[in-house]
Length: 187
Image (cartoon, rainbow, N blue to C red; front, side, top):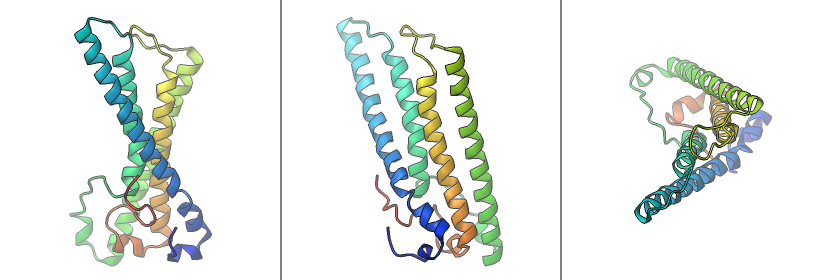
């Protein structure tokens, strides 16, 4: 953690404590990418050897989905998402702060909506014991839960960003990208 103006606000101090979570999400996403690579290689090699590995393709798909969603929070917090600021940059200081607040509120609402309904999907899959239709018939709530955790981390990151721009409006002027203070930019 760095000494920033956020040390004056208890809310911002609390938000600063979330940085390790975002970094952990990046590391988990990297782990899923490594697993995805291993599963794809296993699938290719098994086909060349004439051996059937049931469920490998499904597992690779689940690893890709989970890895993608875990990566979203870390990527958002380190400014890795593409952001088109052509309109916002044309506003004056006050207009830009208000536009940033509105944009971050919409992003947070969308991310919370996604996390809620992914969680609901996983919950219903667990309730009904739904299984995949592939050769291995995996319980669907397991990969859906991983995607839900990643979506919840993204929702938390977007709420973090929204609260920071509400409490410190100068952030909207100083850093047009995502809030990268304290995250270091690497997982």
